[in-house]
Image (cartoon, rainbow, N blue to C red):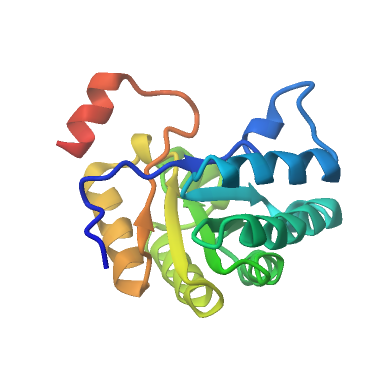
Length: 192
């Protein structure tokens, strides 16, 4: 196996996050066309969508998983899923045709989200993250975990949640600036 630690891996989220921009919604034909173009560009991962969001998104992720796998077998097809069983199972079903499968699961970790959005304690959030990662690991080759609003999460707690996700089987960690709150200096400080 080739050592890829010094290589930049391209994770493309055009088919999921990019589609959220006003006026940029794509139908199935356009999504497949974009997925084939991304596969031809040799991106490493295509995050194809959020299968639990709608039957249309589920069908699109499944179609992309099959088409991209045919175009470029080395490419990973990712599906986004909240940290709950129903979302994760739906994501696993949607990416089933892919040769390299990834489930990207997330749960909010910042104090404001824990208190007002989730109404969960710190330990309950950790437990949900662990359960989500463990289930996702049974349905995919790779598990990406994101602490939603991670940049506004207390550093010690962020480390605890990420460590628990890794121990549960997460193979990729993504610390998003979900609400566009941070500065480049703060991101540098977080990772240094």
